[in-house]
Length: 158
Image (cartoon, rainbow, N blue to C red; front, top):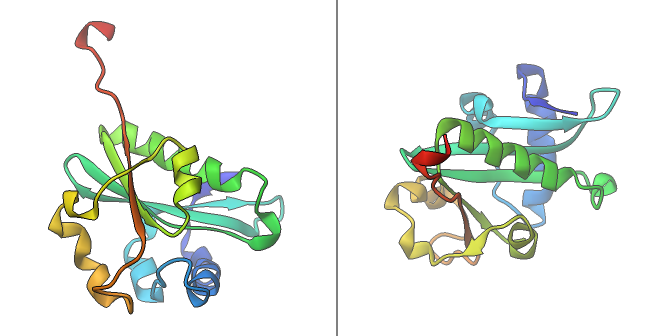
C-alpha cells in the first residue's frame, strides 16, 4: 500500500536513504530536511506498516517538479514497488498541473522504463542546484538527468 509519509516514519525513511547513500546510489538526507519536506514523501508499506520503499515529489517551479529520494529495500526490489512509487508521484504532479518532472539519478535505465527521457542538466533551471552544493560530488556530479514531459491536453478534450 502507498500512503503519505508520517512523522513517525522519518527515522525509518532516514535509515533507508542513509543505507543507499552509503553505497553512493543516492543523496543522503538529514533528519531535519526530512521533517522540513515530509509532505513531499510517500511510502510503500507492507501489511505490518513496515516501509519497503520511499519516494518524494518536490515542486521546483510552476511547471517543474523532481522525483527524488527513491529507495526500495533490497529484499523488496524487483516487485514493482519503485514503479508504483514513481507512478504515484507522476499522478500527484498531474493533479498539481505540473507537466515536467525530472530525476537526477544513477539508475537511468529504471527511469527510462517509466517514460523519462535523457536531458542535459544544463537545461534544468539553476534553482535545482540548491541541494547539489551540499553533495560531496559537487561540482563533479555524475548523476544522469532525465525528464518526464506530460503532453498538453487539447482544450477540446475536456
